[in-house]
Image (tube, rainbow, N blue to C red; front, side, top):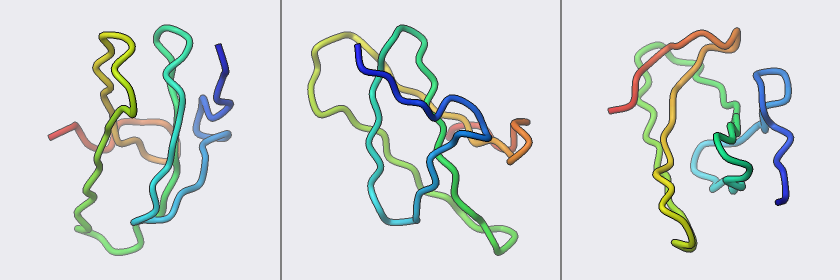
Length: 76
């Protein structure tokens, strides 16, 4: 399968708020990281995950991490 190379905090794909980003769910247990800046404390981040096709029974999930890779917030 095709691979994304944004697998850790140093290789995370930089994205801009409001601009869709696309990734691949392959291979099994794939991790794709995207980086964005939150410059104002207390900012609310709205994230939407979707799949273009339903070829497999995959349930995408997310975590919000600090730039050092530690957990900053839990999915809501």
